Length: 323
Ligand code: PPE
Image (cartoon, rainbow, N blue to C red; front, side, top):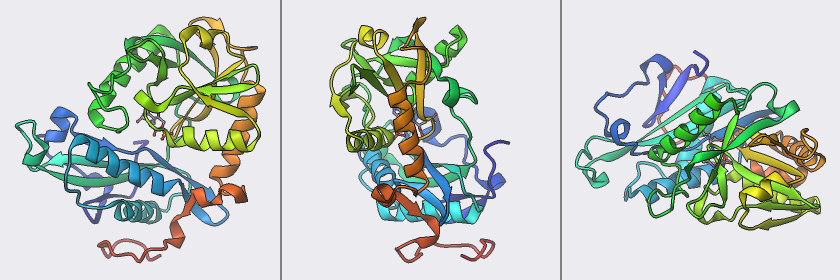
C-alpha cells in the first residue's frame, strides 16, 4: 500500500500501521465530523524538516474550534510534537503528514458535545499529487459545474472532512471529462480555489489571487505571497473573474500536496504559451529552495524533527527507535 508506514500516532501512542483502525460506528465516518491537516516534511542537510509546522498545528486546532469542539485532547504545541515524533519514528525524509482530529465516543444526535475528539497522525511517502508530468508540463483544468461553499453553509476556513465531498464531486467530474483539476467559483461567480489548491493569476507583470473571505487560508498561498513580494512582484488579493483566467499570462495553483504547479490550459483555452511561465518558474524555484532549508531568510519555516525544542512529554512505546 502506497500510504504505508511503520507507525501511526493515535491518542498518545505510536501504533503499528496495521493496528491503526477505528470502529465502523465512529460518528466522524458517518457525518464527516473530523478536521484534518495536510503537511509536508522534506529531507534537508539537517534531517527531515516539517514545513511551517506551527502554522499547520494551529490551523488544525482552529478547524476544530470552527467545527464546534470546545475541548481538545491536545493543544497546538502538543499536536506539533506528535507530528515530529511520527516523522522521526517512521524514519522519513520527504513525506506527507496527515493529522486527523475526529468525533468519537458519541455525538450521534448531530451534536459535537455528545462525543469527544481523538487525534491520529499518519505519515507516508507521497509523490506528485497532480501527476508525474505536472511540474514540467503544467496541468489542464476546467471550471467546475459545482460551486464552492458559501461560508454560512460550510466553513471554508476549516479543513473539515465533511467539506471535502464538494471537492470530490468537482475533481471526479473534471478527471472524467479529461482534465487534471477543477477550478471552483464562489456563489457570486468569482474564482475561489481548486479542489485542493489555492490559485494565482499573473497578468501584465502583477500577481493576483482571490481574497481570503471564502477560501481556505492556504499556508502555501501565504508562503508564496511572501516569496513573491520579497522577489519584488506586486501581489494583490482581489476578486478574479472566469474570463480574467482566460486572458492571464500565467495561472498557477499551490497547496501542500500539489506544491506549485502551472496551468497550461483552462476550459480549452491555452494559458500564455501553454508552458509553465517565467514568473511561475521563478516562484516555484524559490519555494523549492525554501522548503529544503536552503534560503536563510525562510529557514524559520523549517521545523527540524530531530531538534525539537520542547521536551518529549508524550507517551512513547518501547518499540520506537531511540532518537
Ligand atoms: N484549498 C483547499 C480546498 C485545500 O484542500 C488545500 C490543501 C489548499 C487550498 C491549500 O492549502 P495549503 O496546503 O495550506 O497550502 N489541500 C490538501 C490536499 C487535499 C487532499 O487531501 O487531497 C493539501 O494540499 O494537503
